[in-house]
Amino acid sequence: MQRERIGFLFMDSEKTGSIGVVAPQRVRFTQPLVLRCGATLTDYDLVYETYGMLNATRSNAILVCHALSGSHHVAGRYAGEPKNTGWWNNIVGPGKPLDTDRFFIVGVNNPGGCHGSTGPATINPASGKPWGADFPLVAVIDWVHAQARLADHLGIDAWAAVVGGSLGGMQALRWAITYPERIRHALVIAAAPRLTAQNIAFNDVARQAILTDPDFHGGHYYEHGVVPRRGLRLARMLGHITYLSDDAMAAKFGRELRAGELRFHFDVEFEIESYLRHQGDKFADSFDANTYLLMTKTLDYFDPARECDGDLSATMAKARAKFLVVSFTTDWRFSPARSREIVKALLDNHLDVSYAEITSPHGHDSFLMEDAHYHAILRSYLENIAL
Amino acid sequence: MSTYPLDRADLAAIAGWIPPGAHILDLGCGDGTLLGYLAEQRGASGYGVEISRDDVLACVRRGVNVIQGDIERGLSDFADGSFDYVILSQTLQAVKNSEYVVQEMLRVGRQGIVTFPNFGYWRNRLQVMLGRMPVSDNLPYDWYDTPNIHLCTVADFEDFCAGHGVRVLERIVIRNGGVVSLLPNLLGSLAVYRFERG
Image (tube, rainbow over all chains, first blue to last red; front, side):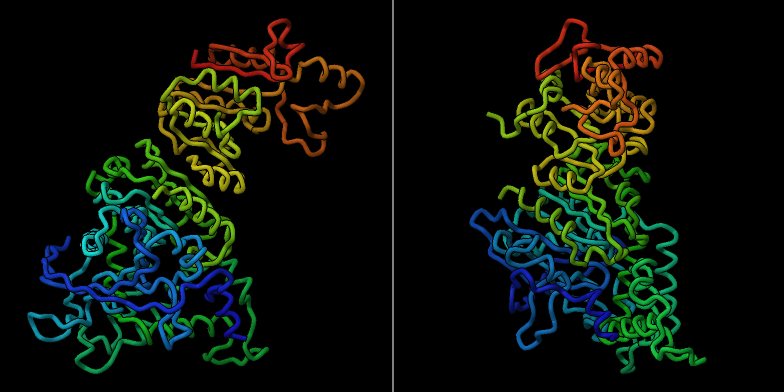
């Protein structure tokens, strides 16, 4: 029963072609990366995957940016791990909206991540120990600079498009501001130009859960052979509530009881408790707590309009890309009104933009879901990109 | 040959008024036919606003900029004076707050263009005289399913403009695709106006 519900929310459809078996690649950059916080990464690894073929004019490359818990594993599955499909497998593949028959698609794990790129679990060359909480707090702009170096490495002068949802959408927006000549289209999905106080508040509760876990050890838990599992689990449970809508939760779980009757104890009674705990456990087994802390700070810090005294329209004056902005009706984490702030800044600059507000019950997580109209919007937009 | 044939006479009339390179806002832009045509034939830029998701998809498919939204809620995403022309084709009669929409058009645009079915057309008058709500090519709905809640005549609209500080710059009244110059409020079925703040 529980499995079915999880399947409903997260399983990818294999109706259209799947990209099949994929493998990650790794590249080391030795040119130092000066970060927004002032620190420098003297050298770093990026782990990435590519799907499809780069064309002769190198004009068909799309960068897919991951959100808080994503990775470079965007589509396909790993050999011998049939269940380890990419996080956007329903969008990326042959004949899918991000069509690998037409585009060369790149997914990359951002610095500070925990899926193979240099991050808190990597050895700090200065100390010979894992960075832990000493890993510098990276900003979206740092990721974009790192991604630009990956583009150089792959021989891509300009992306046909940079695409992302949530924190990924913020990277697409940042690309358009920072490298206007290297991005032709930006697809900014379920994003916001900056976090609200409420968003930051949720992030801080999540961080507090981790920071106050006795197994956190000031971020150096690797050396103690433990992980702050309880904190990470709580952080994910909280985050997960904010990614879903009240209606979707009501529809899928309601007040349904596991045992069919009240048992008057603190173990799982309601189905929603079971679901959230399962999500928390799964996440705590696979994600690094320091990376979670860092990524939530990256979200909190994102505010490109700061460069122009809070004037987003003035900030977007630098952009040259064409935009597709997409929001979802039940997304209360980054509501449609937040996407329209981005749209307004683009309109003020007479930039090419289309905006679609997708009716979806799934809240913020809608951007990951299979939805015929949403996928049709993405597909139609991308089909019009000249190569 | 355009890839966006304008099979509606009012759209052809509007296109005739748009100079090359104009920046345009098309309210209730439908599937983006007019904007696509103006981009291709006049090098116009701009956006459509559309509430229907299927029409939004059609615009995206055509490569026409479209902003999904409800024009009844105003045009707050658009800055004052940011367009050369704001177009409202065959929609004025279907909005709840017609006065507000016209004011918003003239806030964000230098000039406004509206088209609407002329309720004063003699065939409409005749149907009412015979005791029936008019149904025609330009008014293709029955009374119970019509979106048209603010129907008006050519004379009504000109009174409205005079009373709301709106100066009419040009008017074309059409019947069967041809321009009607004699007794337009009686003989024309479709009215097209270009106006600015008076």
